[in-house]
Image (cartoon, rainbow, N blue to C red; front, top):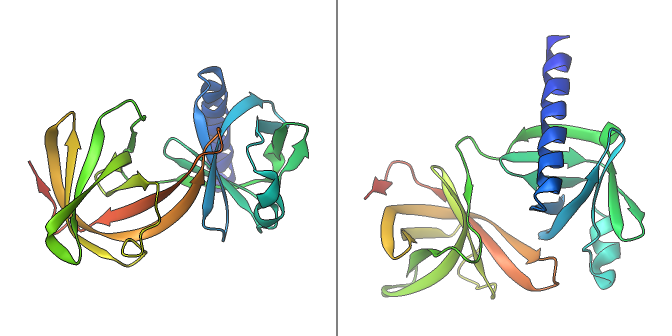
Length: 210
């Protein structure tokens, strides 16, 4: 009984967080399970029956995405699982009753950065230590970060070790890390622009704060 009570309390907490996000017109990420793609969307409304988000699925990709076995919404530090959704005009409606696993996306606090914020990562090229790449940081936590790129480069694939990651905000180095790529997601934002999000898990034994 205690487990069910805790789960219901967490679900109510998530519904309130969804309502707050709708009022602030914040973006959320919809990810079909077993598909390496994520879509940015906005929450239109939240009721006791369903959560309505903007339908940002490109028509040409609808069969591919809707064929997924389940879906997840990333909101702040939470993944919200849902087995299905209904297309209702320009909305996608996710029944609250179908919400499955609700869990923390990360063990430590995650900070997101908008495109207007100068948060970048300087990456030592894994094949040429004298060359460096700069990428815009999307989010950061003590355990890892993700960054965005217009190109899906072949050397930044899951399993790739990145020996030097310098986290820079406003021209100031905040921390230095080494890490490993754990995922690459194809991102489609609300306007239809495409990019690739690379998630990196830090090697805690080698992490160095500046």
